[in-house]
Image (cartoon, rainbow, N blue to C red):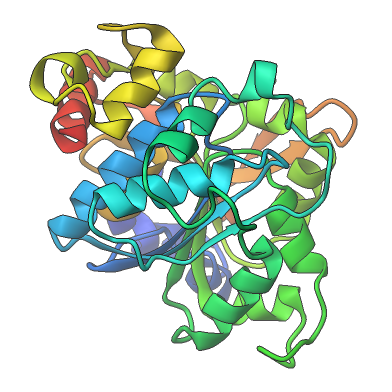
Length: 329
């Protein structure tokens, strides 16, 4: 049997001897609108995070998703403010925003604040002066308050927040450990990270220990949208022709790639997949990932009943770019 598995093939898998209980436990991700999403992002080092936030808001306005919260996963003081400023611009200022509280991770303004500092300082937001809440505490609160099995986490940066969540213990929000809370409350984890079927990618390389830990210990199924998915999808040029100069997403792209430029679209694909699944855009390969905790490189083992999956190119990148540009506008 091919390693490319589609939703309608579940019965066939059982017929060829796969364990039915395992298939049910690791069922393929099928979104049910509106998808309740928690976004985890390193917004700042790359402008495609700002593009992903724009796409997410467009999908919410269309009724396809519900943004339950956003987490910033680096130590930069500008990430939470940038996220909040974008949410305010889209008239969703009430979205909870948390941030990583561990110091020293990707917090060099000269390298990792090409636009998030400017957006924080130039657009209204709650975190220009005050500190944002701790991401792990906010994760625990929002998951504890959520219905069981309905939250989809979309991680489009390194994974320290998710490792810290898994390692967290009982608190005022829930008597469950972080691992137990994720198992009960999360439907699926979507990760923009890795290079498939094997290789190395920036998000994993920046914090390899958390990438390895989360991929090994996360209790639900995970789908990865890897480096090779977004590298050929170029978006952003229409921001400069169709949006006003003061639009913060246009500004983010201008400060990162220059006026009129485009950028590879890694993070946007993860958000699109969260809302609409894979069948119209990609194929899905099932199996198991292994991540080197020292350097972040990943390898892959095919398994039609595996609890991990990665997206594989099907639709022409130009077609997906056109769709993502429309959503960003």
